[in-house]
Length: 109
Length: 117
Image (tube, rainbow over the protein chains, first blue to last red):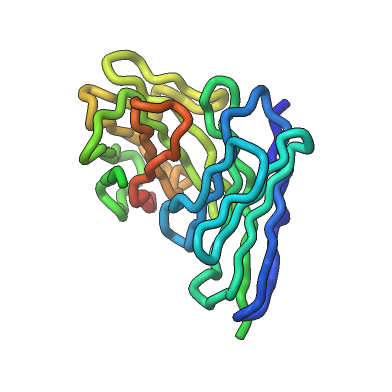
């Protein structure tokens, strides 16, 4: 079956760095996405990785290792507004998005 | 970026009535739209894939007669929750992808908070 695993909840301190991991097992692979979702709102796109390596975009970076079925989202210089759920999603061979359950990130002052 | 508009954002309805939710792609033609349901503190659950001009493809366990999907044009898909019950209360979200490239980000509507009383 298809499976996406990510931690349920993480806590970090304002100004610090946090890494959210995602492992996956899917039928085929056409890219991995990270989305941010604030409570009561729809997800917003953060990043897309299809090749191995690190993609940096401002305070956020995303890493992918296809051989390991592994990705992480790295958030630097954490701000209180970064408190949200972070969803990992993999596009399978049918171009369907398979969603992880999301990681709730709590930022403390 | 592309914009997907979903309406209404919130709706409260009486048990037994039907509710229609609209999803529009504003600046691109979406041959395929997706409808998700999200329970509190849970991830997105794909309900169905809406294909323009043809019948929607429903995921296992989703009642097609209860959740009617119509994708009559390249920019509009609707989800109708028929004979709503309190257990249908949830956050419903639509998304669409640009047909130019299949492996692109999904653009989400704002979501609809449905409360059935």
